[in-house]
Image (cartoon, rainbow over all chains, first blue to last red):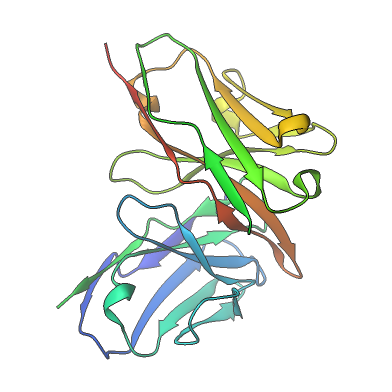
Length: 107
Length: 121
């Protein structure tokens, strides 16, 4: 299985900050990488697919980049509703696998 | 609008079986695969498998091959997940999610609300 490793595991930031989360794959996955946001007690929400495509309805302050084995999710100006857990997920090989998550907390 | 609505909270004793349903609306049911995933308390997301709602074909994660089955009732736009011989390790929130394809693989664009399954004696 392809292992996905996110860094950092947790992050404290303030409203208005720019934040970057990294996801690394154990082998090249081209651009077969998606990002999700999950809030407590809720299902994950798709933010970014195919490494950099913004899902419909997702604010433009979210962006994704990368290819091969290294990917980033950037939040350009944190809003109060952005404090959540973020997961990356690869769809290059079955089984699809997720990173362990990055918890974004309010400083 | 697209919705996936799952059945309610479940409590099971070890060794029992479990069925979770996922009712779709707002789109053509058989045009998309449904995947099943789960999330143990405080843990990350684990993929369990998918069902092709058009053909009925399935793919299961290796660890669930013997205990898991997916089914569908196209007449009511509902997918089902059946898990047998549950243990406390199966305590988790179970999600169904719709697969959408893109130029680079696929992603899960709509999710059910999740069903908390507790396995306890």
